[in-house]
Image 1 (tube, rainbow, N blue to C red):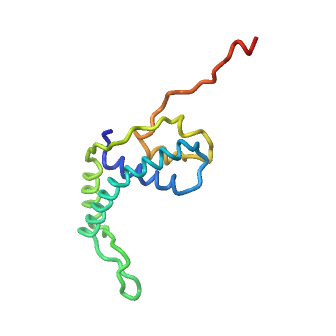
Image 2: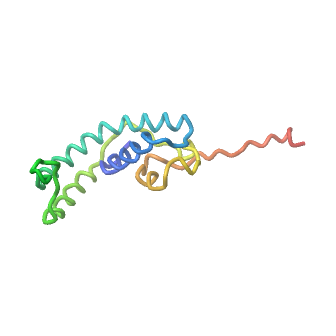
Image 3: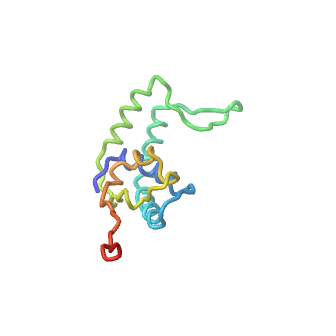
Length: 141
């Protein structure tokens, strides 16, 4: 499936939250989401390494009160360049060995997947096929 790097990055972030917290989802959905997360993790790790390198290239070390380095931060003067370059990474099209999941396969419980997570999953969740109850006319008569 062709996805942008940004789609992969956002989808993995959402999947990580879904699979690592207690949710009311069908067992088959849990299985599919966990497998999808595993496949996307490889791409996510590469993208996150690029993001960290970009932050280190454009940023400055952040230090605590004792002078120990606690991380890196891009200063406001370089945020525009950071945003532009990170967007270039995010817009790259990748071929990822995954298939989209049907919305109906993920259940419909309010304690399942949140709207923001569906947004982040993007093209990895598609509508249909819709399941309609089977009406057994012989039983109705």
